[in-house]
Amino acid sequence: MKLYFLFSSLMLIACKQNQSNYSYSGVDPLMQLSLTANLSFEDNKKSNGSLNNYCETNFQAYLYDPGEEYTNIRVSPNGKILKALPWNDGEAEYMIHIVASDGDWFKIESPIIGIDEDFNIKGHFAWVHSSVIAFDTRNYGGQEISLYTDPNDNGRIENSFNKELGGLRPLKGCGDWVFINTEIDGLTYRGWIKTKWICGNPLTNCS
Image 1: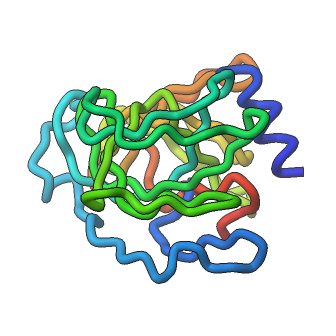
Image 2 (image 1 turned 180 degrees about the vertical axis):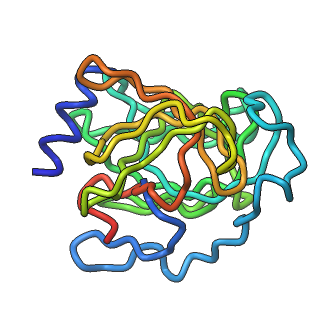
Image 3 (image 1 turned 135 degrees about the horizontal axis):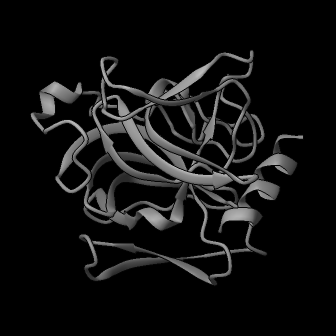
């Protein structure tokens, strides 16, 4: 049911909580991945609402690049291609751990977890464009999630929802917050979401 919702939503628009326990078919592919970038927005010393500056963050997502044969992994934002990951029938196959963002780009940490094969990143870090990243929400009990105008609890609430959403597109991450802007079923979800509500596993939930 989750997969049906995920892919039907992504066809219309072409989240993992901060944790290291993913699994494909009962296997723990993250291999005790160390999450070292869990900083607050204030720790990053970036102005509220900024979408253009380098900022450390800590969340997990999956790659989704519909209509493409490969997704490029780069050594730097818009830099040299380090790896071109192949796709199989346009399905979401790769999970990534994001540790920073800069403009329209996200910095990821090795390894990239694949359904069939994992990929170690030369130099341990690489970059992917925001347009190829997605995640789901993990409010499986119908909890209400609010999207804020600024990356803190004091910001104005842009909108709220209590249903699970799939295929949310992140544009920026900073500390414990991620900025999204995605249209699903004719509704726009735009604002800062807390990373605790994010599920980055495309195959199953993150409970």
